[in-house]
Structure formats: C-alpha cells, structure tokens
Image (cartoon, rainbow, N blue to C red; front, side, top):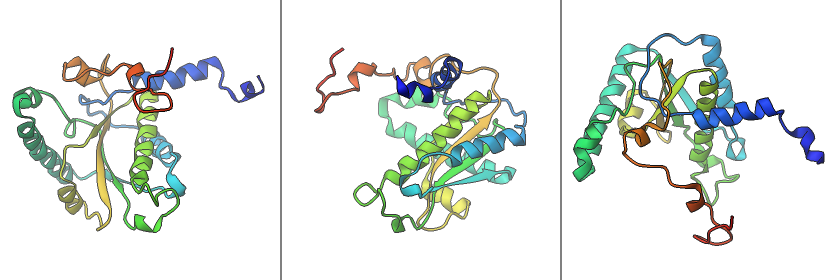
Length: 220
C-alpha cells in the first residue's frame, strides 16, 4: 500500500511497542545520578507532546533542594495516611503498599498546569479539561522516553495541590498535577506493581472497546 512508505521498519516498530509494553509506574529506585544529556532528552520528549491549540500548558519544576524534596515527601506522606483512612476496610492493605520513591530516586520533578489557561479557547470551549489531557501526554512522552533510556519513572498523585503549590510558589490559577520520581532501577516490575501486589487487575481489552454505542461490544 502507498502508506507503507511512512511505516517504521520492523525493528523500530518493535522498539516503540516494547517501550509501551514495558513502561512501569516505578516505586523502587537506586540513587545514582542521571546523565544531564539524558535528562535533557526527556525534557525534549515532553516538549514535543501534542497539546490542544498548541497551548503547551505544562510547567516542570526540577527539585534540586534537599529540604524541598523532604517537604514534598511529608506532603505525600500526610495524604497517604488520609487516603488509607478513606479506603475503609482496605486501609491496612493500602498502608503496606510502597506508593512513592521520593527519597530514593535521582530526580524529583513536579509537573503543573500553567496559570492563565482561560485565555486559551481553541479546543477547550466545551472541554476545558483538555489542558490536563495535554499535560498527561507530555508526561507519557517523558515516561516512554525514560523507559527507552533504561530509567524508571513513577507518577505520584497523593498530595494536597494547595500545599504543594504554596511550597513551590506556584502562582494562583496554576495547579500541580504530578510528582514524578525519576531514576535508575535494579529491575523493572514484570507486571504493573498494583497487579503484582494483588491490589487490582487490569481489565480485559475487549471489555473497554465499544462500537457505535456505549457498551455495545465490538465483534471479533
């Protein structure tokens, strides 16, 4: 077919699908430093992400101050306890999970939505949350690039956004959405960690794909 000329060769295609399939939300790290050229490539990958109306709503704060890193860890720990309490009968099970690697990883990055997003109408008039979707694309780009570089990344969402914003002087109207732990690992999990720990299992693909109408399953 004429479109085959745009297709990656087999080795390159396999590399793309391998990065997708082997990406993991990592919690266990070793503290060896990350080469700065590699870190810059990861930032470049995030920068190349698609964004609605080309608004590029992501802002990345690299945490290099140990005191600030420790303060971020405490904010996460506070929310971890509150989340456990909210889980009721699964509280103790949750508390046994390792949910972050902030003190262990080589780099801590905080990703935030920018302020003054209301001025961007293109693609957001009826779906203003597309700014968050754009930020998520940037994080996923970085995540896959990290896996290709042999680095682990973990997305931590257990935090109070206001407390984190105050700590990092994030302006009104902006909102932190992710704490990213990035670093070298001894090994990548064979399965997503929450599957390995029997917290929850991934749903089968055919239960998530519909045809024409909600819950009208596609025919195989």
